[in-house]
Length: 312
Image (cartoon, rainbow, N blue to C red; front, side):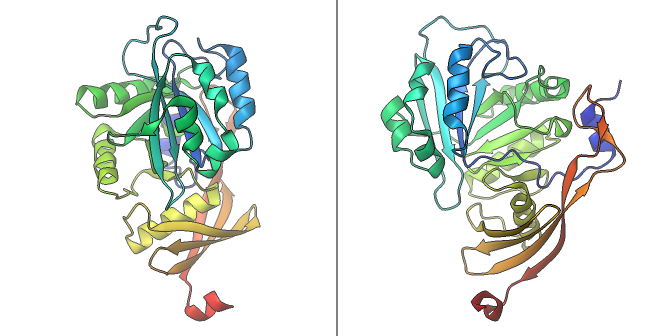
């Protein structure tokens, strides 16, 4: 039986502009099984899950559950669990970690401040500190959300962990099941699709050096989807590798057409036209769903802006 990821791959569906949107990621370790909506359908107290969802809504913070690869036995009540927070906006990127024996401690966070990039609330509420390890590689493995994430994501996470890659976690949901295996790399917040172990290792090596690998990239979660596509297009066209070099500073228009301004830290700027199209022929957006035509972000023009254009 064909899967949604097989159809997407065979139809060569573009990856750019498909990443989940979040300025700040908040990750809570939760072993055991996950349901389709993991915050409220796992062994985390569902009342707490609903409260966390409500607290994060509209703040730019996205919450996900993580677990180590392999067997997913529950831990005894009161056992310490890992918590991460990462802010992804260029020039203000950080990744902090903490441990907590009671996940209800997360309700003490100021989610609005966290979404703006203030890590003080994380450090105060949870005793957080700057993460002293390498980048995190979060592999979506939530088979209850879509079977492709389990069939393809879990073997990838296991292979990475078995080969000694640090910072590998399984994660609940990154969106875009049809691009499985999907991976989010923190702290910069770039997402990847149709990932293979060797490619993920290359991505992580680049991040350790402050570089971004554009191949296989779905976009930086910091930006809305037109901005993701525009930034990746400039990064590819101009050969920009530095992780913090590019920012989306302006987006004008609305679906189906946007004009996006991408700025470089060296002062250069580009005008990028992004048009929303419908992927064809129809394909399943997730396993078991009806055939559809998911939106795609097509970059139709890139133009470096002159000094005169910038002044006008």
